[in-house]
Image 1 (cartoon, rainbow, N blue to C red):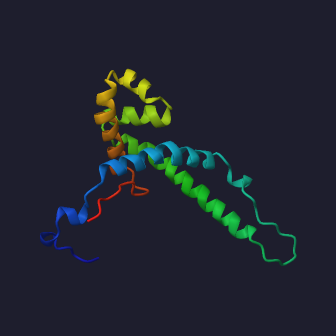
Image 2 (tube, rainbow, N blue to C red):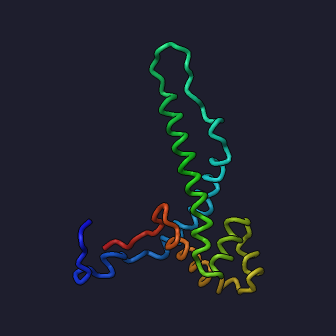
Image 3 (cartoon, one colour):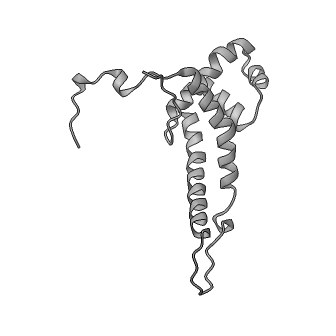
Length: 150
């Protein structure tokens, strides 16, 4: 391991500037599209995946690669699903409530506003955007941030 000279490292070297709008869009897409897909994938058991056929006859088969690919996809999907709740729990309480309601309980934005007793405008321009950005900071399996071009 090499020593890092922190005197010559700036904050922007370590933490590049985040494009907040694009990051919020990416997180919302992840939570509303990718996460449900990963949940569907993990609901299948590994025994349902196509297994290798052993009939004693040698043959070139693409199903071996397909089976391996599907197993890797299943395992990755499990990790995605496992990482979401801990990431949400690292956000502040208001953000946790919003993320849980929207993406785990399938509330609409209107239902969230009513539950949180927030105006639609403040919810849409302050609380929900903040929750999405916090999730991006707390989710470590993939980097959901979109960085500004330099």
